[in-house]
Length: 231
Image (cartoon, rainbow, N blue to C red; front, side):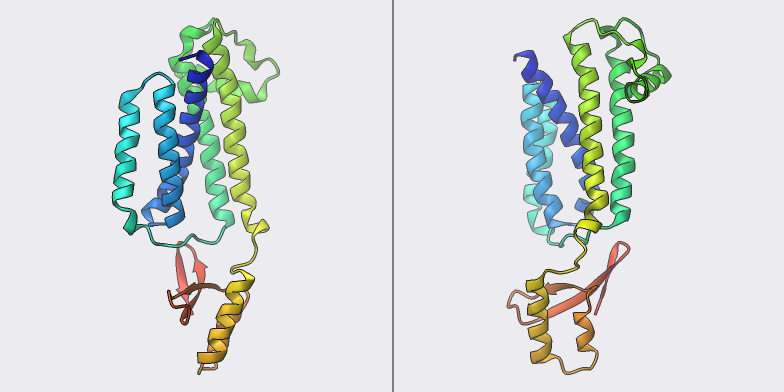
């Protein structure tokens, strides 16, 4: 494979790895959207591992996970949670840790591609130096792969940070708990079937809705922590 294609495969492998880490907890909670994203990412992961150097073992591992998720597709039925600041903060912290780990592992394992040898602590310092020093602590790559890895640390850092900021600001961008169409559908159900004075509390602005397949029944709920409080 041409070097540019191999380098792109390595970069996409790292990005899909980060995304899969952020999806892990939602897969555990059987989220349907997380399952769909994981399927797409695993396909990208398989292609990336093959392209970056015919890493058949890694590609097979992604393939096994893909087959397992497809086999268990009926388990993932839960709807996605409303965006929250807590989710954004977790992803932000995770993105910083992931970028630091990616850079540290790379400098420690690929030091033969540079004019100096890195200890583990030295690799940590060099990763931080890429973002906080003007001359990258004077590091000198000795070949094309060494130069590419430095660029990839920047790309991974920007990618993970932008993703984390998106997760952090989602609650601001998507304030509504339910769409206008869902609110109208819930209102029609309450007007037609609501016999209790408490039924109209289901129309408060903080409510989200789960409708039956027929569309004639609705459960109104409010997300509380990692669960939902029904109304």
